[in-house]
Amino acid sequence: MELDLIFEKLIKKQAKYESTILGLNLLITRLQKQYSTNQTPDELNKCMQEMKAFFEKFNAILGKDIEALRKL
Amino acid sequence: MFVNLNEAIQLIQEGKILHIAADESLLKQLPKGKWIAGTTPYFITEQGGITCKDKLFVNEISCAIDYKTMVYDSSNILDMTKDAYPNGMTLLIIPFASDVAVHYAKEAPNSNAIFMNPTIGWISGYDLSTDSSAKVYDGVTGESYGDKAVALHISLPEDKMASIGIVNIFNIDENDAKIEFMQDSLSVTKCLVNGEEVILSDYIAENNIDTRLPLVADYNSVLVNVSIKSVSEENKTVDFYAPVFSGKEYRFARPVSDYVESFNKHLKGFRDVKPIFSCNCILNYLYGELDDKATPPFAGPVTFGEVAYQLLNQTLVYAEIISN
Image (cartoon, helix red, strand yellow):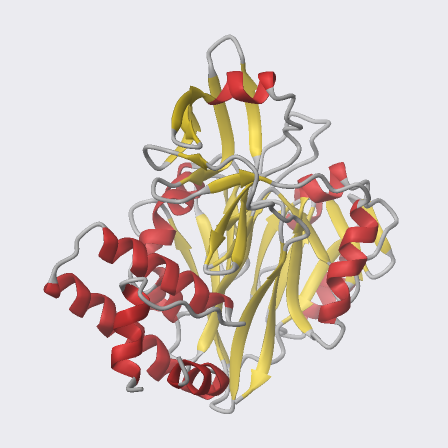
């Protein structure tokens, strides 16, 4: 599955994924809260951008997570 | 490493980039250099827990290829990530009971970009048997502060990355009462217990809850503690060391019968970790009677709060540098 779609599902709490990376788990929690209090396309886009930026920056240590997320 | 004053001075004079924790009486004798520090007389060394005012706990940050120290107050601490290096880590020390500590505790978890920069640190403290106060030091200027936070931003080589982790010995039972709060706060009167509005201090008294146990919330499988500072049955208030947040479900932690055994059990999974920094909570130190007890591979200051991106309680936090 495309990562973008998986990110969207995570943010909307339509999918669950638990990482071993502390920062990713805390980020998912915050984005879920952020979106749940303002469920608009604009807010979703902001959350998506933040998630993508995190994966881009920490790509080197998120290999296992990306692999597992694609299998969701 | 746990060193005496002369050894610490020598490390500074050699130009090492250092994080230091010690009693104020020692910190104020240190020369200027590439270091930050916070006050505490409590430590868990490789030899075990100890209360000590004549030695300093020093972490040499030898992995750094560049560094800068910055001082922040409530107005700009959330801008800290803007000062961080593109690939690096920030070591943050905030004085206990300061406005900046309260502000960071409440606002950091909701801050954009906070997770884009690995941030670890602690709340500095003081000898609880005195009426002293917590301080932080910026070694570059030699200035100390009781009302500002100090950060050591480090830059890492391209093939290295910082990783932040925690060890939390507490657990929850999903069948236990679910506690929710109406707003983000460090002090509450009312809350919802299993959906029913109650006065939390009454609930604690009526249910004979051990207030040494933290409230615990699940952050996508990461258990985050909020420790109880005080309960006033007279004022019907419960004060916390870190804020509770609306929209989160909390449960009181299950009792821990033997702290040391529990730590040892949890630490088995961390044998291969090579921390460049770690610290543990004073509540674990006190309630767990960790004097003379070591927590390998972790050693460091005993603190009045822990920072792993956001403020945590009753938790061991650590940073390690890993190869990409």
